[in-house]
Image 1 (cartoon, rainbow, N blue to C red):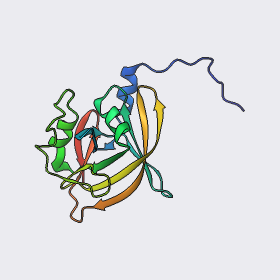
Image 2 (cartoon, helix red, strand yellow):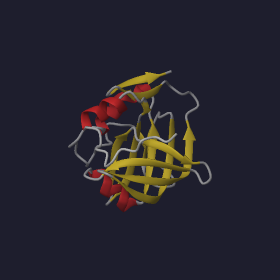
Image 3 (cartoon, rainbow, N blue to C red):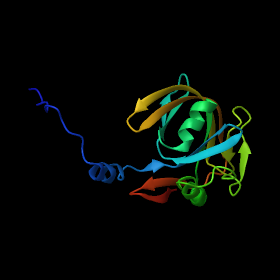
Image 4 (tube, rainbow, N blue to C red):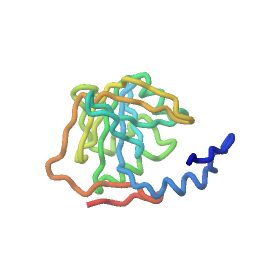
Length: 171
């Protein structure tokens, strides 16, 4: 028995797509880099583990976002996996049009020893990555990074998650 294959299928409409994927709970991260002598940051729920050997992660970055050019130029990035107590930081770094200069001033952070990318203090874990590949993905680029440093917080808070277009937590 074979499944019928649609001829020239049309993609689902944006509203249905957003609603369906809104039911997929994801962790929340802040991805950072340094380019042109300036720190850049964005909130992302599109982080995924790609491989254990070598250790690779991917993050999807909107091509029109300022962060896109910055991560391409820098060739490296940091990832802070957020706890529930960092909801305000997640909201701030998801705000479109916020000023680039000084955007990390309100968020305690440390500069990563390997990449120089800012890492948010108090995060559940932190990664530093070197870009290995960038692939087209519609209106986003899929940025693959080799993990060159990984730190885990001993006293982990509840994880911050994104579900149904809202921030929530997972104990």
